[in-house]
Length: 290
Image 1 (cartoon, rainbow, N blue to C red):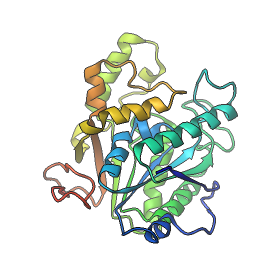
Image 2: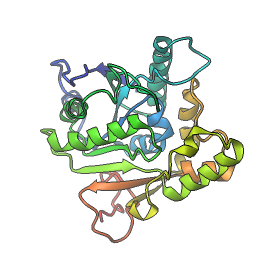
Image 3: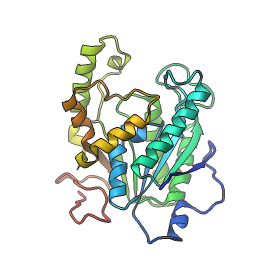
Image 4: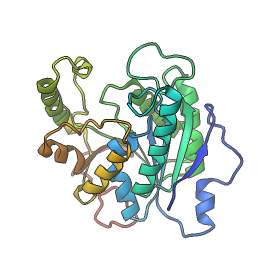
């Protein structure tokens, strides 16, 4: 199924067309719905690629909401920001199709880049409440049973803005989101990545970002994503304008990052007990909610 595209303005005020939920309800029975909220094209694949593939395998309807078109990325394929934005938007749609995403929503802010002044129109220059309002509008449109955003533990300021805005959006949306997660980079894996990076490029700016990753003991949900490993790599390679952070890793570290999904559940709150081993309740009687 080709992913459809609806572009909302910066304040999150979309058109008066029927919601994603209403469109789906006219043609098929109720299905579990997932909303993944990210900052840039490629975040959906570099981060949540196997999660989205898992959603399709479980019959879950997935929507990706992306805040920017990735204008600040670096690529030999484009001469300016506008050209790169066009390329990266096309890559997002191609990866979404590959991963079985039902809908893609673009919010329209500009990529802020990792450092430097944040100019007008960039994501981090936008008031947090404005970004939260835009995401809340998407939540009310999609009516997701599960919302996932990145933990932002890689140090990128756009990721932090989207994480914080998503958490606020879930609180302010009219739709009551039953389950909210952060997709996590585990601290132990990020430390291994930093050691490897230091051996390759001891001058890398990433080495100045401090400790990265979510503490392993804070992770509540661990999913075996090995069956989606090759498909996730396909989605990553669809973003040909960008170099993935996994490209230079040794095979065993690539597998450690990409063959398992790690999440931190924020809603309902974690109360201890065994790790969750499934995310989608609709087709898995083995899932456990801690």
